[in-house]
Length: 382
Image (tube, rainbow, N blue to C red; front, side, top):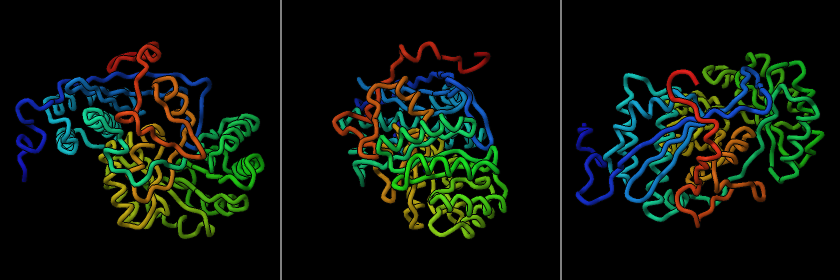
């Protein structure tokens, strides 16, 4: 086994740039009104931003996670990454994975690794004067996007306005949340279909709210309105249940899951059980760009497509490197927060996000002054 102290990237050659600092801050941005899905209600979004410096460049990464993720960066990961070769991102990722052995690799810990990994990839690209697309050797120069939101507590008028806006903007599909009121869900889906018309895809996401037989029954009802995507009809931990729904769903309706995968093993298990028609991964949860590409390799081996969950600005870059990329989620909460937090934000064009290859890295610049009112301490009371 390779000694971690002498692995690639641990001791750069004399004169080569090294990672000289790792910083982290957290920001909690309130929503205009609470939002709900089939299993949860929330009233704010927390953004954890990581900065990594080497030479004259700064790389940034972020995750949408509790501020506890920032504490993991500060207490555990910063010391592991500082002093390393910024060009050896894989070695740094491996070192972080080893460092959190006793903490576990799920939840805020994996989100922390994700943010640092994205920052390291961004830093490497900036040091080389390349866009992330070019650094990653992308298969694609754009990724199709679908509008996502449709929260279960929206009024019919607000729901119609939201999905109608996405359709008018040219997004090829819209996704709404279901599961809070299963008996009313078919009516809401019918409303969405009437608003967006036949040319726009309609997706539903239950966030694991349904039971197995309930999900099968509702799949039939949703199919009446040409729903082609049924996300987490049952809990993503219920692999047998996902397989049951996948096998019993109407022809043409894909079952999807994977957004709560914190490492490659969850994706492996979903594929081994034949639980999904399309695999999902979240670049801000699954271990950053390095982690997402590991999941993508499994999808390639299984002959399935990969869809990116949320974080559209980062997903747009990472997914260009995924051979079997299907689409990314243009999630309402993150779209709103990204516009506040960053310059260089991509907007859909012809139904897709197209990274700007003239800008180094992922092209985002943090708007620190605009975020300042929302800064929260990493530990203790906000």
